[in-house]
Image 1 (cartoon, helix red, strand yellow):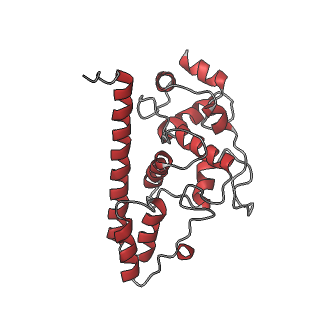
Image 2 (tube, one colour):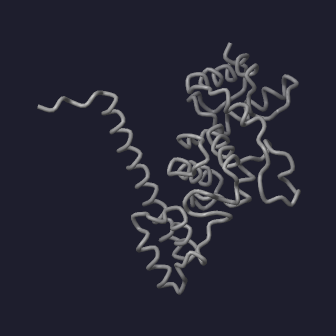
Image 3 (cartoon, rainbow, N blue to C red):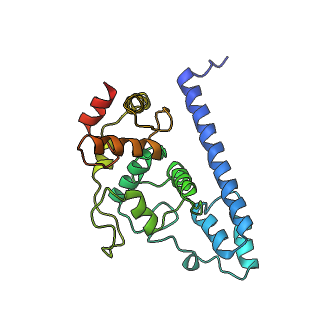
Length: 235
């Protein structure tokens, strides 16, 4: 008789199934959005995000029906390939984008410079919250927007690529746990700075509260915490 799988193995299986389900749901939502727009550009946007998706064949058929081409040269991903590069970013810059998304409360399931399903989902959620089309792929302007305030010279410099990170990277390197983030949010709330919830996720409400607290205490209002600031808020 085969022994039952250890609890850890079962947990890994459940996690894997959940991730697959989420990926399929994101695939379905992206294709539904493309269908709603009904344009060559919309279907190409879907294929950029899901080149091997559940509806990829149908998307290509719709592009041809609309008079477009499905050749790779007619379906570019800005500065890179559908396999994960985007906006001409280097690997370190992609790591920086992932860290910034995590710091903003959009989990990428890691920060390794590889834009896999977790990162694509985080990008799509970030795009949704800012009124962009939920493609899961970044334009150069969007990559710069994610890093805005953490890189010098992004605005009006004529550069199409983000430079090195600052405060967001520093905070990400602290490795704050969800419970620590919740404690920080509670500390801000006690001090009169509304984080719009104490959930252990640093969304825009928490970022605004951090910046207000920093400004009121004579610090640079970056919206991101140093080790000393995080420690002070958790006390």
